Image (cartoon, rainbow, N blue to C red; front, side, top):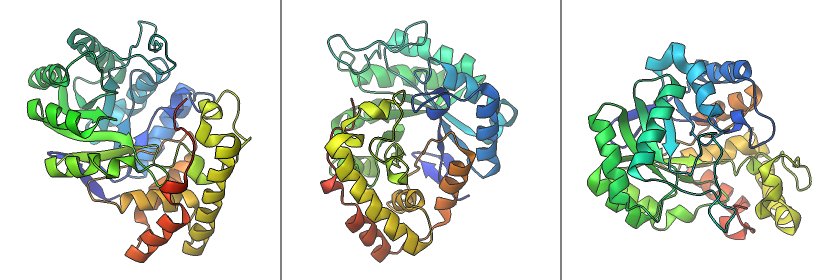
Length: 326
């Protein structure tokens, strides 16, 4: 598979693998043996970039990634995250008075998270360590400074941010160079294009889109009403009710266009992301070997300027409705 470079010298496969799915969230978790087979299959297909977090599956995603990749550690790049309020049991505590996850990026907590991730991933150095979400109670300069110390200590190679705004990115980058920004970016969610994307390109920071397939909605496999109750997407406005029906109609149009190109809607959506810049490395997640093969194959789909325009006409982000989080 083609290789791309994030920031200053972090070379990875053009398509990575998001590893939240293997530990649950979108239904049942894989077993350790199942996750090992999936991750090693990804590597065999050319994927060298694997993304996880301490918060995924109450530490279990990191543990499964560590087990699967230990024999090929020197041939892969592993990214993980700190910054949510994760208790000793691995559970993410909610923000007081709100449903969203609490945040904790105090320097002592960053160090604690880093040591836990090193142990669970079975590595002596984390290739890419992200702040999972900005923490309004901790200056970003303190966060970047703590990661800079971890870099000097040889425990971390590269620093990343996730879902940060342009001003926060600039402040962090001034203290410790940021190699990658992980943010939601896909055909149906393009908010970063106005301010964030120009900023990271100016600073030489790579973009790692999470949910490049709209949390699976852009595959066409999730018609409204088909999502299982134990899947958190069943509680997100974009996927359900009137909003879900309207959004699904856009996906149907994308499927028709994909058929004319000889590929699936998911592959066309992923190819669109890849064609938006050589500094972009999407990390679609999956628990399916078949879906994995399709996602990897999307890296080989060539799109012309006319193709890209046709895709954007078929699924204009301005027509997508509903909130993207609970």
